[in-house]
Length: 193
Image (cartoon, rainbow, N blue to C red; front, side):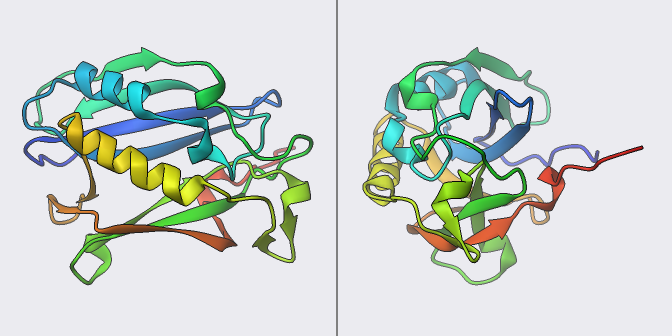
């Protein structure tokens, strides 16, 4: 794995998801926090997350840890164990998909691949899918993400889009939760003889 880029004042935060079936997923988000340590960024995230943000993830999945790495090239990664209802999927229960995801597009004021991002919400329940479309309830999820982004700005940690290719970041101007399911290829289960 290549080294992380140096992007001044930006923290890389990885959310580790787990399920009872031992499937794992990791979401990566970035926050610009010039006056906060990695531990303070993680604490702010934990304080501002709500259950409504995970309406597209099956209720059998939950976030177990947050790993915050300042992209300054020298600082150590901070780790925060999390639990509770606000870190648990709010979607339906039962069987879930390992590879299918609900995609949340992150948009900046600029064009091009380096100026947009996405979050792959893992483990949607199979009952919440039909013909490649997420049919479960997204009621409140978009509002919850907008509220979270605003609260993080107030906490001193603006959620941003980071480009590792250009070692730069862009402010997010809008997010859109898509109903067409996507695939995060690295999450595809591989069966070996």
